[in-house]
Image (cartoon, rainbow, N blue to C red; front, side, top):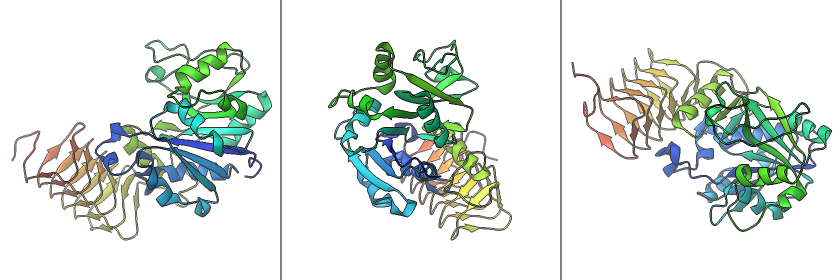
Length: 359
């Protein structure tokens, strides 16, 4: 879709990814494999599909990894530029920090943690047709209590920004995607941390700026926790979450060429098996994410868990709702349940951790 070349995109990817440790000790969260591709690839593909070509990445944590992988963006049909924060500036400060690279009058800003399915062209359309100063993508969720809520009036104008509350007046939440008129980015204070949600937007409302809401019920997930990361990856594999970067058939599993899956292994629930990974006979993978080179040995069960690069799950072991760091080894017959996290390189001996008697 052409026609949005007069809009720049900014992606904020400076976070430390602390909630996803130990996986983010080696790679920033937007670079973690998600349905077999770096998470950021899905967002970049959506931006390219919307006809936006100039994208600025606001980086800080492990900044060099992004440029090493994506380069100038030409492989994706984009022109990519990079701006690195030397100290954390928050969401608003991060947007202000990339201002020297911006060229267009309209700037579409993305939180790099979000897996979304909304039509970006429609968000830009709302911004244009309402003649707004700033437009926010708002998504309706079934339980808004964990998020900041954003009520709108009959014309779709934003009326308030509310912090997390036990009794939200609306099911509309800030989806982490904004369109700014360039002059409103110029107004953000420079050189210090600024929160766009707590400082910039409330100040704009107070001074009478026109902040428009684009409300929909599109696919939306913050990928910040292991549980959400696993579900988002599985939703991509199963076609529940859309991505222009994933052409072809959707199904219960995605197995990369070069991976080995033994006969009798069961792969369901949107499982991903990365390059060079091995799955043994009789293993059961349900909603599992195996990074490249991971090994799940015969008879083991992995449910709703992430197995890091080169990690090994021993025979008849059980990993449920866990995160196994790069190069770790979980011994035979171990049981890891309920949010267990194993740090990189750690070795757990056969039968070394169990939640039930060893029979």
